[in-house]
Amino acid sequence: MKKLFGTDGMRGEAGAFPLDEKTIELVGRSLARQFREKLGRAPRFITGRDTRESGAWIEKAFHTGAGSEGAACESAEIITTPGVAFLAKKFDFDAGIVISASHNPFQDNGIKIFSPTGKKIDEATEREIEKDIYAKRESEVESRETIIDSSKSSAYQKAYLEYLTEEFKDLRLENFKMVVDCANGAASGLAPLLFEKFGAQVVAINCAPDGININQDCGSLHLEKLQAKVLEENADFGVAFDGDADRSLFVDEQGTLVDGDTVLWIMAQFLTEHGQLNNQTIVATVMSNIGLEIALSSKNIKLLRTAIGDKYVLEELLKTGSAVGGEQSGHIIFPRKSLVGDGMMTALFLLESLYEKGKSLSEMSKGFTRYPQISLNVKVREKLPFEEVFEISEASKLVENELDGKGRLLLRYSGTENLARVMIEGESQTQIESQAHRLAAVIKTSLG
View 1 (cartoon, one colour):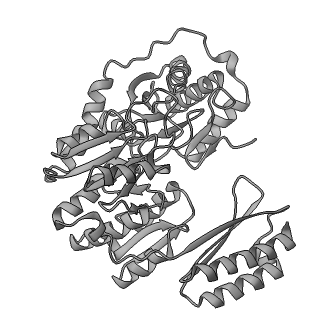
View 2 (spheres, one colour):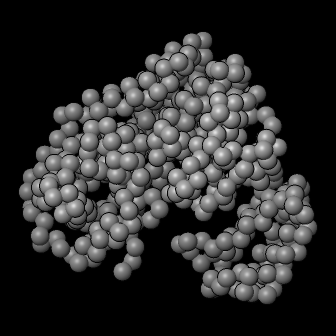
View 3 (cartoon, one colour):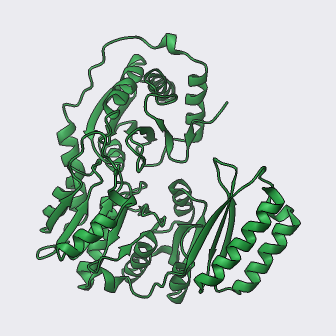
């Protein structure tokens, strides 16, 4: 049985299995049945979606399936992923369901399911949903006209904004100009209002969703327009969200990109100064630049690395009791506030540090030097452990000896394709390019 849930829920092309209407009904039915059996009563679910044209019918299909098992479902309509997670906890829902494919193009969609704690549902529940789907129990799903209860959607969206405003109530952004790129996604109706509440002069771009323009040449994957707009407007700050606003990337007043690694660098120092950096530890993934590790080490701060995926970052944060962690891509988690990455919250944390220090974003970014990096993909016929292939093992050792502790080699396989990925960081771009191509050639000869 093929797994349908990955590290970030279930995702695929809208209308095709498993994101077709009948399968989504089965997801709703299975989830409601499992909760009813566990709780001994009918569960309560809250759903929300991003701006994709497929979102409304997928949400309706979920409500149909869940309702057939007696679940009481409400909709917050267009809202961010962390917004749904917040509502599930605040209003005592048994689960929060997000209809979104995050940074993917509009043709895709997905389902993410959160418990009221903010953690994604456990794998046992996901496997049971998959089992029900493959059992093709569609005959048990009643055909009926479902009317989605969205009567409180405006109140729910307002509650989420009020929560963020209250959490950062001392922040003042008068005489501060910022450009906000909402990716024509879930943040479009929320983020500009949020920052205006703190007194900022907001220039909003890509805030006119039409169902198909989500993430299209905008948002956190396409920062060129944001960089240009920050310079054009002589703004102090720029922020870009992805489609469901669980991540954010930034642009400083000089038009320079500030990614998740730089945010972790700034927040590590900010939290340390406030005595809030537990264990003097930051959590990041294997993709974070070695420059971050070196910069943190200079401040006696340890960097713990996990596999790629916010799921693994959160696991390590909870295991170690650390205060902040995240990914280079801008997915940052502050577990004291939320167990879900929240792009708007991350922006507020960053703005709070700037406000308190009275410094610009470029000034706050100093001290972290990004090392040159190269990544290559090599097609392979099989995925043997690299250490078990003598030629690859020896070539890898040679590269690591040449780096001499002043760089980093990461070898891994793609999780979905027959590809070996070679990533090298070091002081010299010319040197690491030569090393990467040399190692890639060995892998191709041995496994290609």
